[in-house]
Length: 184
Image (cartoon, rainbow, N blue to C red; front, side, top):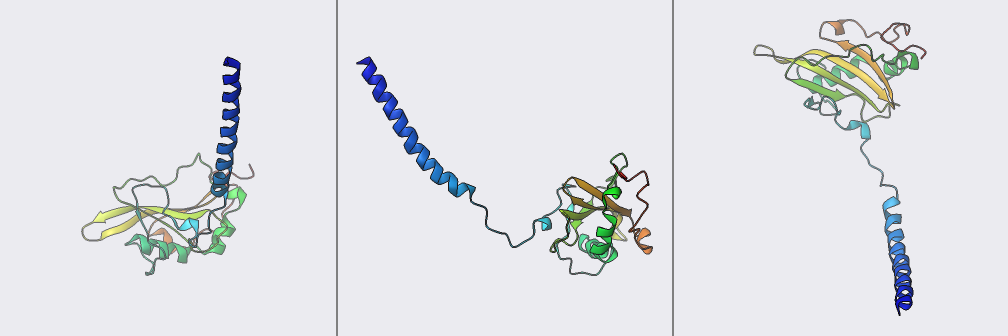
């Protein structure tokens, strides 16, 4: 009788496994199906860093300037064309991480993305900025950092401020400079 109980138990286990396995395979097929395409490009999401920043709305729909995140986005899109960013972002000009990016030294920080509703060839083109909070000026950009990312590659396009934007951006700097990785 003991042997008979073991055989029945074994048959029941196999039968249940087949039934459960069949049910799971139908369910898992549905889970594996690719997600429906999304209409908004992924790179329009707010930058992940700095986490406490005030993010620019996109598209900026404002004049270029320094008094809001949207104005800074408009200014940087006017300053750096997509063609200029592509020209800068060659492997030799990837950022050397031994060199410091902009340090956040103000309580208020702004951030945004450029060209986020276009196919750019980059995962993101984003900026962040320190902000002065002066009663006379209200809120105004102090300094900004503009960068582009593609996969593991990172290009620090420029660190600038209201005075530095009076000159055109350096789109083709010497890739032998120590703040670039060069041919590594």
